[in-house]
Image (cartoon, rainbow over all chains, first blue to last red; front, side):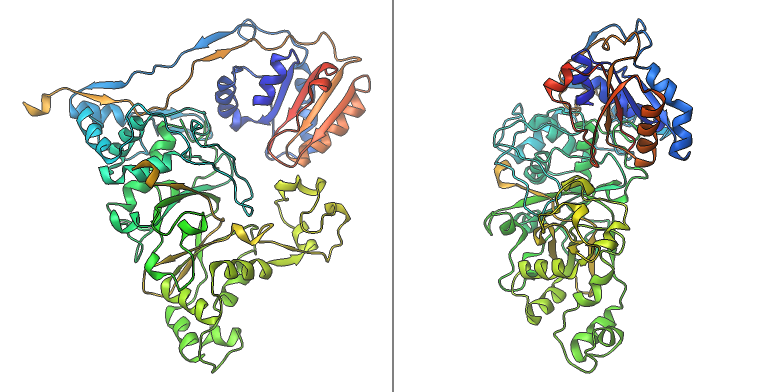
Amino acid sequence: MPYIARLEKAGIPTVLLDFEDQLNMVQHTGLQYGFPNVRTVHASRTVPGPEDVEIWTDELLEALTRPLTEEENKGSKVEPSQDRIIFEGTLDEAQTFFQQARVVPVPVDSPISIYTDGLPIIVPTEDKVKEMLTGTSHQPDELITYQRDIKPRPGMMMGVTRDKGDVVRFHPNDWTATVEKVATIAVMAGCKPEHLPVVLAIAESGCRTGTTVMNSQAVCLSGPIVKEIEINTGCGMFGPGSPANAPIGRVYQLMAINLSGSVPGINRMSSLGSPFNNGGTCFAESTAGLPPGWKGLNEEYDFKKDESVVMTMGFEGGLSGRQFSPGGYRALQKSGHGGIARRLDVKGVPGPHNWLEYYTPSLWANREGAVTLIMVAEMAQHLYDYGFKSKEEVYQWLWKQSFMPLKDYRNRSWVDLTTNGWMGIERISGKHWKELDDDYLLPFNGNTPDGNCIIVASSEEEICLNLEGGRGTAYSIDAWR
Amino acid sequence: MAEKEVYKFLNPVGIQVPVETYPLAPRLNSLDGKTIHFSITGEPDITIALEKKLKMDFPNVNWTQKKTYGTNPVQLSDEEMKTTDGVILGVCW
């Protein structure tokens, strides 16, 4: 949309070809850039291209020549209300106010809450927000800014560069926020004052939401804060019940709704959505479970062991695991018995065994890119005992396992967007994609091993889950104390 | 009674800057002899067929194009914009 605004401002008539269900987003984003009436022609999601173009090509070209209507030919200024107080009334009236919804047309076609995630919230009275603000030394009217320089890690497919002190703009509307607004939302989510530094660090991420496919958002904590605020890092850490995990996960989504103005069907176009975002997802690393020499998540991001961080993640996928019975896993490691041992050809040989060999073949069966593995401490220790003396060695091993022929890659939906698909230079060979042989081997695990991420959890029953996406960006919690 | 007490509730909505909206660029009298740019970011099933049809059915138009597999269009340079009369942005991603 900024490109269309640039063209129209330069006097170049423009027409957009898009699907009809995207119209809300086009108009909404158009308003953000000063052109809410961009001319749009709708293609079909189902009619074959050669037939489809016969239907609307004339309309497409006419959009460049048909004289402007009165509405299209005028400008105006839109000044949204910026009142500090949004509502005055009783607690019951406020509950009703904050739970109001409006119907979002197709592709949603049902009510969507304006200020909440659909569930009731704690209504943010002045007193409750004031109490929440005791959780930080930052001033209520301070704008949320980056607390240190942000650079994408080498293995990240996409990422942003930001300088310390830059004002955080919340995607997709580029709105901004003060510490007080973040504290207001922390109240709404059910957070406690001691959670506020975490919430402010999450706010520093800009709380992005997806615009396509099935984007999931989650946050992962690392460092002393985990014990300090009693985050659950063990049995059921992704499930309900924790008075720390649940509101902190929720607050990401409430900030996305209120500070970003993110609305399904308007500017949050992830097709069917993701259950990660329904109530929010917060989990954490168990430092005590790390094998000797394995870095904590905080250290992986160049923070110190005693510093607390939150990693915000956005990934196009869900949470999955590889099916094995915990008893079968134990049999493998104790004495080399069972099906896993047979598959790994270590029948009768006591462990430690590299259980990832059982796990990896399906990791890239239907998706490409880095992965986040969340494993219990016992399984991390087995990897250490087997020979992986650092997380980096595991990342490297995973990456090497992922090499497959180019002919397999050609049979997939996604192209490598970081090199402009087949039109760019493949990074490892340095050759044009079209010059490579079908048998050329390339990593399906991303361009470098560094995008992978391991989180060690403290649960007992042997399980390793994987988030179908790699690491995110880490923000200092201590900077917001 | 306590339940009738009136409170003030803080505004959680992000800070928005005022937005100025503009008229669309004037439209063209005709496409004949004009340079129309086709900016392709989208679905090949549509854009390949469209590019072929435009060139075949409208030979009097000087068609230019830029293509990317990504979501962000490859933009015209300031210099290229000086010689471009209109743009079609094919963004069905």
